[in-house]
Amino acid sequence: MSTNITSLIRKLSQPLIGPNATKAELLISWSGALLAFFTMLVYGYTLGWNMLQILVSSIFAFDIFGGVIVNSTTSGREYWHNADKTTFKQLSFLCLHLHPFVVAFIWPEYLFIEAFLLYLLVVLCSLTVMVTPKGLQRPVSLGLASMAIGLAIVFLQMPIGLMWLPPLYLIKLIAAHSVSE
Image 1: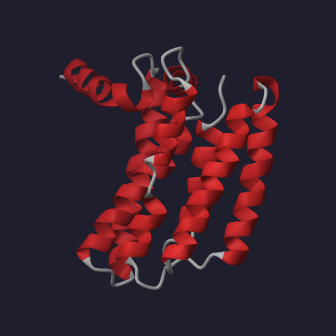
Image 2: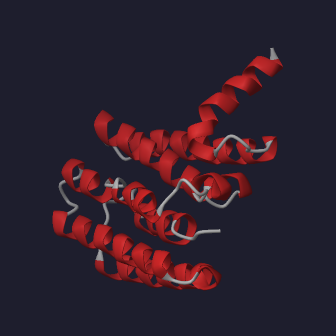
Image 3: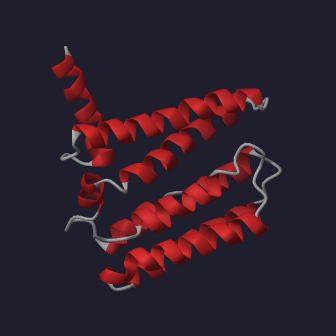
């Protein structure tokens, strides 16, 4: 029974974490992502959000919290930055993270201009990291992510309950995903 569950978890994990994830990496990645998902389910309900807002925020929490963890594991880094993962594929993955626009569509108090600015910030910072020499990518990514977080906190107004999204979105995509190993 335990072997079947482990096999199922590995199969579900492969496109997200990679085929070589250790049991500890799987445990940490899934635990963090699921904890974030269920926390947002409860928190969104306490805020009086509608079902769409609760579901979307929970999925975003799963994706972003889980992505920060996965992109910092050895197996995740090897999987996402192997020889098949070209800069174009990396950039495509990055550009598909349209979370700010979805938030602007579902939470009327969040403006599309703010969504565009957050998205532009992540794309420009990530591109900068991707063209930086490999030995300097980590410090450049952390510096740019820190600056971007500061700008987002000062200039962008997120809906109550989603203030976590810009900092973790920026960490996931700039500091965790854009750095090649």
